[in-house]
Image (cartoon, rainbow, N blue to C red):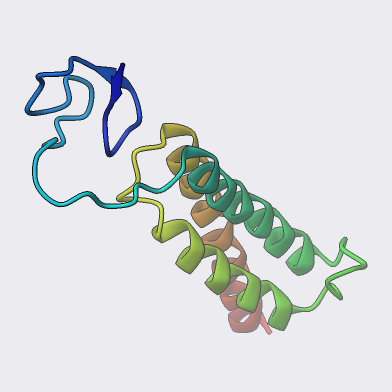
Amino acid sequence: MVFCRACGKEIDETAIHCSHCGTSQSGEITEPIKKSQSEFIGAASLVLGVCSILAFAGKSTFIGGTSKSAVYGGIVTILLGSSQFKKKSKFGKFNSIVGISFGLLAILAVVGKMKGN
């Protein structure tokens, strides 16, 4: 039984390229990112995005409910989430996209609030 170096799915022993993801099976062996790690980073991005929205709304007691924490949380969410776009995990990508959206929404809400004052 042989597994793809990139996605970890079972492939034919004589395969030159993975039939699932297309990665070449010859050449230097690289350590693939584990699926659970990719999904964890995507989920962390989603959670941070939600926390950023809650911080802006002032509903979060553990963050402080300030505009500054909403902006910082939004920036970290965007950076963390954007690191997942090259990964193979669809679940991690989805969570990252939603997290980035929440992070951007929190930042834009703070900017809108500042312009309204």
